[in-house]
Every structure is written in structure tokens, then in C-alpha cells.
Length: 358
Image 1 (cartoon, rainbow, N blue to C red):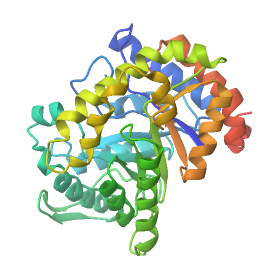
Image 2 (image 1 turned 45 degrees about the horizontal axis):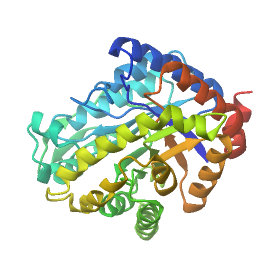
Image 3 (image 1 turned 90 degrees about the vertical axis):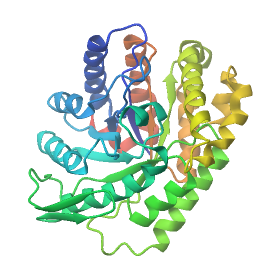
Image 4 (image 1 turned 60 degrees about the horizontal axis):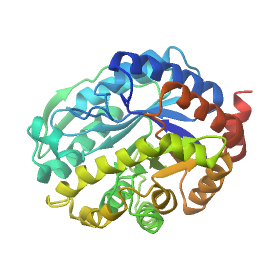
């Protein structure tokens, strides 16, 4: 089981400039400790929890200071403000400067505020994502790109640069609904699940849907099918003692849960997002950290043994990689948490990575 990081530049107690430089320092450390992957989401207009709106620029800076850790956009929003040609060109550039360590996870967005600012109607997001994915795959695999879809009309053009990873870097999608997991399996791309705090049974349901669809679909026409299954852990923190871990991470965990409630409850009323209706039932637990830690795969807060136990459970469910959001608890706390995971958790759950960095 691989252990990766997903950080979003939480500005608790710091400035944007300072936090970006702290992120660079943290990823350099994570690379030395055997973490598999690092990435950020693409977020706009959502401080203080999220401050990274141009992730590829950060990745390029960090790539020059690291050796093994992979860089994955988690996620690149494939809606009308992100033309898929630009997404393909930026990823290829990152793949070149990182010597083949670039990956991409896409998304159709879950933030109404962002959609409004960029003039996107929520009911149009699935169609925009689908057509953008078709363009992206062509840009990676065909010598000349030409496309006549419902959203994008592109005359015949040669796309440069091309990624050094052949046939193309791994592709996945951020998914919360069963339908999105089914779509990913049908397309033959990987999936990163965020289970919306709906619990382990819901996560298993989504994973099973993906696995069943992937296995029953003929992917022989694809250049590089990818049956990867990642899990986004929205709040993670490891300390030597469970009580200490929950004391340090309590506020950031509950604040993030509150953010999700505020984000998803309005979105649940939008066409195409009705699966989020269940989020309203979670409001009664908005102050119950112990319940969140037990109920939701999205929260992993405890000591190294707690992490190992949880990761083993997720591995048995079919998860290939956990992506830990360790953010918002202060730079020194983050580094201490990374050190504990790197020295006491990764050697147990991913000994090959631990051996690589010795």
C-alpha cells in the first residue's frame, strides 16, 4: 500500500508566501522518507483552507529539489476555464522537468462558488468533463490533434511538448459518486475516491462499482489502461500518542468537515449532484471528532499503530494508495507527523518504498 500526500496550502497561522515555501520544504522531506506521491488540488476563492490555484508552478519548483516522489494534480478541473490542450501541455512540461514523475487526476469540480465565478452551470459539468477527457487522451496519444465534440471544436494541430512517459503519464479522476466511479472504470482510468464522510460501506460500494465496471469493459483500444484506486483522506495527522494527535488536529479536522457541509449541502440540490443529499444527515456530528475518526475513511488521526491498522483495512477493501492531507496544523507539526509516518508506518505498509530511501 503506497502512502502519498495531498496538501492544499492551508493558511492557518501563516501567509501565502510563507506557506508555499513551507510546502516545498515538506515535500523535500517526504521524498526522503519514502512517500509515494505529492500533489495539490486546484482551488480558487477558498481561503484559508485552500490557497493553491496554480499547482503546476509549485510542482516545477519542487521537482528540481526531489528525486523519487511523483507529482500528481489532484485534481485538474476539466471545465471550460481549463482548456484541455493547455492541461496537456502543462502536464507534458512537468513530466519533462521531473524526468517522468508527472501524473494527472482530473475533476469536474464540486464548488458552486468557483463555477459561478468562471461562468459554468453545474448541470453542464459532466458533459464538459467528458468532452475534455476525450481531447486530453487525443493530445497525449495522437501525433496530430483534431476534435469535433459537443464542447470543443479543434482543427488539426500538432501539440508540443509531448510527455517523456510513454505512451502517456497515468490518468485518474477524483470521484465522489458511484456514477463517477462507473465512468472511470468504463474509460479505463484510475480513480481517487473522496467518500464525502458517508462511511466505509459507501467507500466499498464505490470501489466495487469501479472494479466491476473496469473488469467488464474492453480496454484494448486504450494506450495505457490504469486500474489505480486511491483514497483521499481529508484530514490526517500522526503523533506518538493518539490523544495528542487528536488534540493537535481537532480544529483543522472539524473545520474541514464544516467546510464540506457548507460546500455540499447547497450542491446537493443541483442536477447531477443529488447523490450528495445524504450529506445533510451528517450535520448532527459536526462537533464529534471521535465519531468522524471511527466512521469516515476521510479522517485518519492517531498514533502510528492507528495508521497501520487503518491502512491495512483500506488495503483489504481494494485501495492501492492513501493520499493524506496533512495540512493546517503548523509547519513543525507537519514535519513531525511526516517523520513518524516515514519511520514507523511506511516501512510496515510499503517496505519497498522504505527500502528505496535507505
